[in-house]
Image (cartoon, rainbow, N blue to C red; front, side):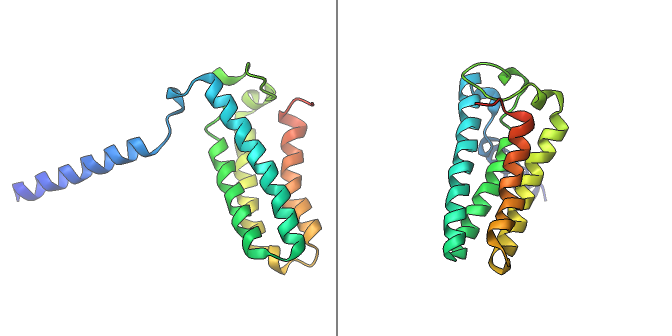
Length: 152
């Protein structure tokens, strides 16, 4: 019984160590790395959205769905890229409204992620692909940019 408990404890310890090192710790990243990282994710989502639009209009729904789900994951990842110490610097276009309305901003990122999942499930059967993309994909981009990004 004691041997079993030791093995069990070793297993639990191993899992905890594995989990600890599996997640990126933004506290270990510099402010510059965090800001550049979030800019890269937003940029990636924009270029991916353009590809989604192209593939969807051509009827290549398998590639479209794959890209849409990639965008969904990126939106969830973005939740970790707005710590308090990244409000300024490194050409960030993030407005203070993000930190002033953190829950609202986080909810928009979650909504965007969920909308991408919904979009992936309905895009192929949509009567009007352009309209569906406008509502579930581009609408989220516009909602975020209008409130949380400095005009450029």
